[in-house]
Every structure is written in structure tokens, then in C-alpha cells.
Image (cartoon, rainbow, N blue to C red; front, top):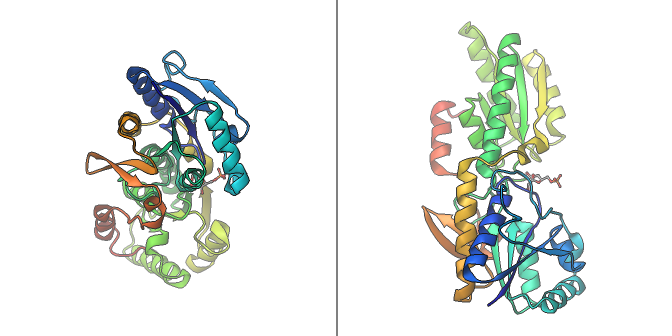
Length: 332
Ligand code: F6P
């Protein structure tokens, strides 16, 4: 038999619990003992863990957040911390560690791998979808859903007042969430890091498009702009002020924020979570290590941990093409 440990690290994402459940059940089936480290890598440093079993994960698949809690552990970057974690894993005789998280978590996992001989397998969990080697990450689809639901509501009030709204979505430095939330909510304009040219061009495009609509004397010219966080110099307020001046109309900023991280996972995230969870456990017997599991074109794959952050992850081509068609090439 083997001893397996799992932890969730970095920004939590809907579907992490579904993934923990799948890992626990697959481990039990394989006859492995399964430990859950709490609070991300902090749990590894402080030997904070609990034994998991099918009873603990009952009624869990639909719950947002993470049963094991999560954290960003800056301290884990040091050699001393990685050595301490390795010693703690040895004490529990852990054979394989499964890490559910994003690229920061995978960097941490690779760092640990330099000091610990056990197997390390990553599972992509983040709403940002900014991990190479998998078409989607666990939590991404739910975050799109949440953002779309909020933007639909903003549309109601925007229409009522014929107002311009600026909606900031998460994504860290990637435009996946912004692009697909904008498409699915029929937003009028979207500002994404991958397609951003300049502040001036963006403002010029928006003003031009609004003027055209005014000239056409279109009824109901509510206008929604989706903005990816961490992109606009001076932030959303600076852009709202500039647009208010240049469009000569009030522009209301709305920051969706951490609402996008919560909620019950949609079925796409649950399915991705259970598939990748089971696949990761199946790799333990095979001896895989230093890899992340992902899904590419419907197939489960293993990719080297390092490739998940060194390879660029491109926006979905079909989404970008659709955006070009539906937004008249006027986007940045
Ligand atoms: O990576 C997930 C994420 O929600 C990003 O979209 C966002 O930039 C970041 O985490 C926010 O981090 P924190 O919760 O530490 O404020």
C-alpha cells in the first residue's frame, strides 16, 4: 500500500472540493491511505493534517471553497522550508503528494521536488485558466458563469439609465475570464492583456463606437466594457474618469472581485475535477512525478510541472475570432 497526501494552495477555485473528493475515493479504491494537509504549504511546514475518507467527502462535490483551506505561503520559497516540508513528509511516510493549485503552487511543488524524493503531481485549480498544458483549469467555468450572471444584472440597470458601465473581472494577468465573460454576456467592448495595444487606442475605439451609435440615433445605448484586473494604469477608477471626460457621460465602475472565486461549481468544473483527480491517482502506481495532469482535447495528459508556467498559454482561438466578428474588430 501507499500513503498519499493532498493539499490545496493559492487562490481557491470552485471545484477544488470536487477534486479532493475524487482523489479520496480513488485512493480508497486503490487501497492507499490518504492524508489532507491544511492551509496549503503552511500545513506541510507545521505538520497540520487530517486523515481523509469517504465519509469526510460525502455531500462535498457541490461546495465552493476548499475543505482543506488554502493559503499563499511566501515562506515556502526558501530552501529551509522545503527541507522542513520534506522531513515532515518523510515522518508520515508519504509516497506521493498531490497539489491542487495554480502556477505559484506548482513552482512550490517543483521547489519541494529538489529536496524530497517522493512523487509530486499537480492538478490545475484556478479561476484564471492561466496554466499551460491543460485546455481548462478547475474553477474557470464557474467563474465565467458568475461573471456573466453579474454582467447580465449590470445590463438591466445600464439599459434603464442608458449608461456606460465598466466591469472589472479577475484573471490576474490573463484574459481568459474577461474574454469569455464578455462574449457570453454580449458586452460591448473588452480590454484584455493579450490584445491590449495602448491606453489611447482603447479610449479612441470606445469613443468612436459610442459616437457611431449616437449618430445612428440608436435607442437604448447602454454600453458595457469588460476590463481585466491589473491592466489599466491607475486602475478602473482612472479609466472610468477618463471615459467620463471623453464620452461626456457618466461611466460607472463595478469591480466583481472575489465573488468570482466562490459559489457551487458548475458541472463542467465538477467533471474536470473528478476526471483529473482520478487520473492523478492512477499515475501514482505508474511512478509519475514532477508532472501536472491536464485535459487536452478531451484526453488526460501529463505535462512537466515547469512547462505549466514556462510555456505561454494562448487565448482560445475560436473565442478571439468570435469576438472579432461580434465586436467589429474594436477591442484591445
Ligand atoms: O489566482 C486567482 C485570483 O483570484 C486572481 O484572479 C486574482 O488576481 C488573485 O487571485 C487575487 O488574490 P487574493 O485573493 O490574494 O487577493
